[in-house]
Structures are given as structure tokens and as C-alpha cells.
Image (cartoon, rainbow, N blue to C red; front, top):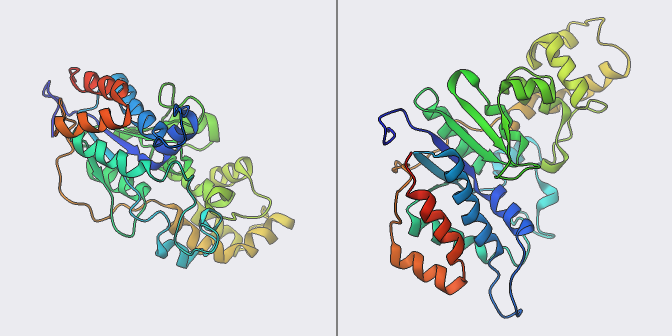
Length: 315
């Protein structure tokens, strides 16, 4: 894989659900009557890709997909994993706004008509697709991951040109560019791996991960910095290190079973099965007629035009 100019190129990986949920809640609903189909997530998602392609000029791009938003192998290890996102009474269905659900197939159709690669893997989340593609391409070309999910900060790796464009506050127009310096400044951890271990200790209520009682970001980072790794911290607890005492020792000991399995749950996979497809970002749509029909039917001609203009830019 190479860029038009003969360099190594750049791979942009989109955490698709993170972006289309953000689009749904951030882009106004322009329907004049309730009978019209909702299109705000579709419009916003296409517009986001146009913004990203214009700003970052990737040579390769993948819309990474949740084929399984709550994999059973993660639930088997931590049963509370994402339980709060389940539709009431269901063991598998994720809660989603009624007006967003019908737009997701339209987003898939738009990506197909554009010729933009969309990849998922049975039994894996989009995070795992991102982790796998990042692992495959590290050292081959720079990789930027676009997400609003802090979990993916674990992938930051300066030596291999892997950054996270974190959309938490500024969106895709002004994302935080997460490098190792960013991790050090924001979270007091030096690497993506240290961020992962800190996040295991801290837990994450949005994913149903309890963490260790009484340990937040700051304390978790201090412990990882002091001992060098989660494994070394646990070894110190087991050997009776006098520096770990009182309630902190009791809480860490009580969390032993959680700490046995949480790193496996939190760590994104690097071996998700993925089809061998061309990840090159096209200069023109793969199916212009289908794209025009979708634009006309759903009134998304403006963002489609913006994206087509972006695709035609030199890279």
C-alpha cells in the first residue's frame, strides 16, 4: 500500500458507531413532518468523513463496525460488561434511539456506494477491528484512530506512528490529538499500555467495569508509575509490600478476581478475523448511480458533494 506520491501513505480508522451516535445527537433533525425518514445521523456521518479526509488526507480509510457490540467472551469474564446498555428484557439487543436505528443501514449503503471499506468481524467489536488493523499496519504506515471512546487510547504508540484523534469535546473538526505526550499530560501515564492498566484499576462505568474501590484516575496512574506495571503492582500486593496498606490494600485484595480477568476484557483484540479487502480510499465513488439515488431520496446531496470534493483532493 502506498500513497499517490510514493510514500507510505496514512491509514485512518473510524470507530463508526461512536461517530454516527455523535452525529445523531449533534446534527439537527431537519424533517418538516414526522412522516419523513430521519437523516441527521446519515448527514452527519458523511459530513464527518468529508471533514476528516480534507484535514488529514489519508490514503487508506476503514469504517470499522460492531458485528458484535457485546461479545460473549467478554461477558463470560465480566458479566456486568455493558449490561446497562441492553434493551430492557433482552440479553443481546443494544439500546438505540428509535430515529437512529433505521439510519444505520443507510450509512452502510452510503459507504458501499462510495467504495469506502467497511469491516467488522463476527464475535468482535469495532474496537477489536481497529486493534487488529492497527497491529497489522504498525510500522507500515502511520495510523490515526478516530473515536470518542477513551478505551482506544491504549493503542497510542509514538514509535510506530499510531495516534488517536479523540473526538470527546472538539468533535472531528477539533479532536484531541492523542500521542504519548498527551497521555502523560492528561493522565500521567507514559504509554498506551500504561493507560490500559490504569483504566483497568480505575474501571469504567460506561462499560460496566467496576474497577477497584477507591481508586480513580490519579491514584491508578500513581500506582502504575510507582510499580511499573499492573503485574508488578499485584506481585507487590501478594508479597506484602508495606507501602500498600490499610483500605487500599484491602480494596486491591478484594478486587483480585476482577484484576485476573479485566485486562483481557479491556484490551482490544489484535487477531480479529477480517476479510482481505482493498483499504485504499477511492478518488471517486464506486457506484455513482446508487450514491446519487441515496442523496436524492434522503436529501443528503450537500454532504455527499462535500465528501466527493474531499475524495478528489491530492494525498
